[in-house]
Length: 424
Image (cartoon, rainbow, N blue to C red; front, side, top):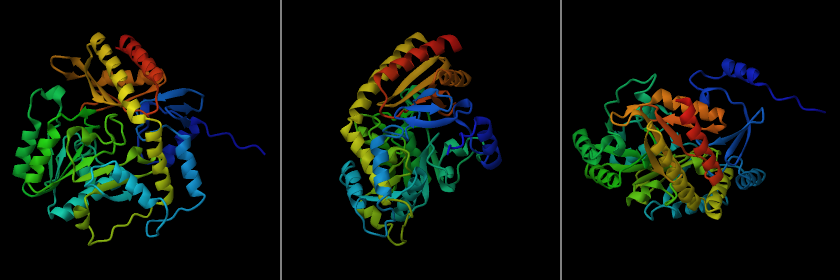
């Protein structure tokens, strides 16, 4: 008995058109019929192999065999919910807690970064008794109704209302490239002082949708001081940059010598399996005990097994050290390209979380939005997957699976140089 051949691309697109909501776009400018993935590569139905430089969800590689085996083994044994006591749950929570500052010892397990960020806000409101929130311009924190209201990237974007809700206070993007010596923390302090009682400041430890921006070295300590003086909590959103992506630390906030009141983690946590978490202090967690919290799938045995395998792989395969070494090599190569191509205004980031900002003029810093899209499309045709972000969509973002090689990086730099020479 032979199996039916896989649906062809045209048929799949017709099915999407008929049954999938039109709010969902297709990545990379044209439909790619992807059939399988292996570590840093995605493979199309026609056999084309693409180097994936944007998928920070599959943190330890697409279909990583260690993670796949752990999930399969546990799924064949037991999968239930956290109202039962089972092996794996407390061990996994303890192992995660051991990667965090000692104070952050209580965890809640959920299924997505959106769920985790919403839960973090609820916890902050329960603890402080306040309602208002502070967020950074250009931020994206999730797709729930509350989080769309807390995401300037969404409410100022297509289909958004344009202006924030009265309980949302937006502070400027602390962008050293465009802001020079501007004191962004002092500006935040003024906004917080005028806001009245606030529940929390929700901030990515490195800004993703705002343009792959590392926070200035003195920003978080001063910002946290202003927020706490106003009675608010500090929430670090590590959904995009956590789990060792910056190389030098497990969590990007650690670079700044601060301890958040709440940490949110997601995306790479399950290497594609839907997992996320919120960690906080026992005192803050106690403020949230009046109403019972339960997540049907959060922290189930299969998720715990998968999450543990991800942590094993990060540790056993030395992926943080690789992120430091490969990220440094990648960044140095991009800066060499910057010397050759005036359209590259800035190269930034740390570890394997990098951004290339394209500008039409380095003096005026006019965003090269169309040019960025052209380069990304051309690189796709050269079998390297990239994408753009930032308020002007002129920042090419690089946040690949952590398992790519030096050869992958050298190939990308060579192809990117060719693309910049030939496409613009």
